[in-house]
Image (cartoon, rainbow, N blue to C red):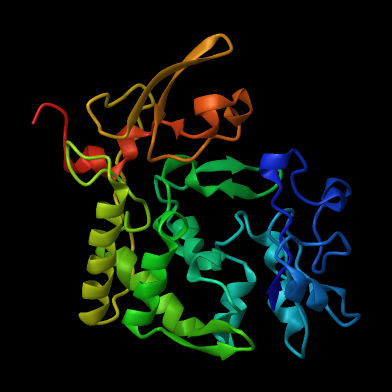
Length: 297
């Protein structure tokens, strides 16, 4: 099973052209190339390959379980949540393999984020069933991939070794799922990086602290996710100008927007260029920094 994604949100060519004329089917008929490199493309192009039906995050599979792995992706409301092929790989006790790349390339870090509908989930695009994940919180695995790679190795869930001239990694899917559940049960905000205190905007400090906490939670033993998490209420009018990540108010068209250094660029605004291509809109009410450092205290 390999990724055959076509996530072109930032280039203006968003998703597969074939999806515009298709209402969803067990196996995608599109022959449009993915953007994950030569190896996934070779798998996708094999005559026996089957492709899952998702406008931006389809997967290609070969082998006796290929159809069962891909057939339900058309029902998944998000790229990485319920119904995505990872769940079938879990059932089969399969493995996640990274060839010459880091764990930041494992899209399925978002699995429980999608399922739990975390407050930092990001901008949702219903037509493409897509999420622009980082718009409501930069992710530790993308901003600090080396830290998360070390976490995966130190936790014991990933084994590494040479494949050709590269160093590659292997993670049992069930171990990966248990690790995800454990660290999110311990800290549901563990994947977003925020200012570490009221003064500093050094997100690396927060990343290192969260990595340490992930490993500590895992050492205590696997833990299930809670049945329900009471997320903070949203308030789009709340702007914490005292936050070290606050990037100021900026004019865009006829409006003025509050921006945040710890949120990724927004798909509705990045084409304005300049600072809008660097930072995202504030999301203070549902931000972990706001919860840790309440206003006026």
